[in-house]
Length: 502
Image (tube, rainbow, N blue to C red; front, side, top):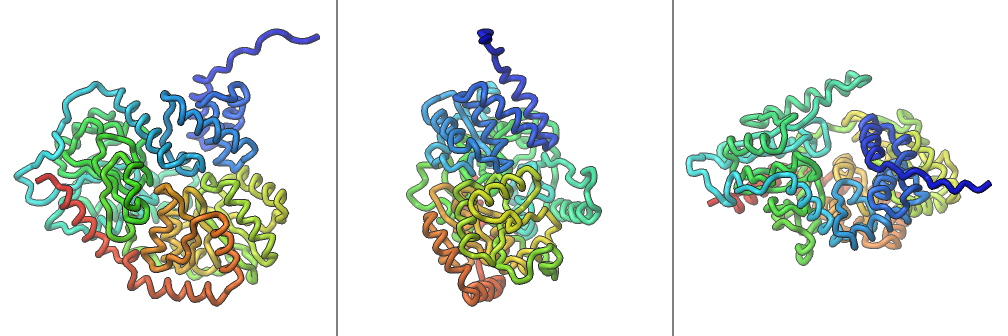
């Protein structure tokens, strides 16, 4: 007999709370099942579609990818109460620069609505006349062994301490006390944290404080320029809406507009934000003359490793990408599989933190005519070994799109390994292109899927050309502006002086 009893309504609020717990535990398989059930119950619901897209993308489960993207993008375009900001937004092909800006603006307004309207703690442009040095406040949750701080360490060390006073406002967790952590990783992280701490005149812990109290402590420190180096998604960011500093800058962590009226400047360069594209940014663009992304002058030398250390075939053409899996799109993976079908001597080496993502990617490869064993997976390893893996084991790094490799690209170029990228319209899709321009290799920047595939084919077939690129990168380590930390810091300091209160 037919059952005419209506189904119980889906409890989206309970699902959202449970998803937060599952993601905190890094149980992405369970999170994906729950968000898919949400989407099954409410296929055109924005929140359900976004959560399903978020979880499935982390696992490279693309069975609903196009439909989920459509629901999310159309909702953002036509429903004023929808908003998104975060890493996956930058990796979603449907998120155009205009849509990123509008969504970020809505998110910033939502954050600001949680705090009563009040006069700014410090009026914009206010000057502290008794400051002998320009006081820079670096604010973030990643003053630990994380990509942003890894890039920034040399910059912080090279600042002119006669002219600049550095204050750290720190939300960082303790990343050295993780259950099961290998001792060599723990030692590396403790050493790096100690190095960062030595860079600052003062460190102010904001861990566990709400936005109002955090803003008050920044105001008490009389910061001339607040430099925000974290994600613009939560209460940590909302404190800047209270205007605790006269000039507020977004730098490095989030490669897109914040959409926030309380952020005055976004640090960029002429490649990532080319002249004429300023309309897609709520901030004024503070352009560096070369790449906006810094480089650490004390970066470790690569370990002397071999392919045998990683069970990689000695005679294979090794193509690699060690970005997180959510950056891999079906379109990019299809291009990679095209190369593998044409080159039976090639293997593809990816980062494999999730068994489910590994399984899904291998299944996709088989569907596209590539044997599963030709897709290999590595893991996160200490920096010296990671650079050694790039230098001694990889022939060519193939970039993702539209969210390309940022620190990974810098790592590869420092290790001497060429990177092929595709550059689009968004900031996140242009960073690798910026780095390649700065190191003198604009020929490795492509502008379409067809161009990317053609250039990859040519490089795969031309071992002498790949060797010439390696030799170019070896020379660039001593001559390129990309690797000149002192030059970079002087340019950044000049930018700070241009925007400092007068």
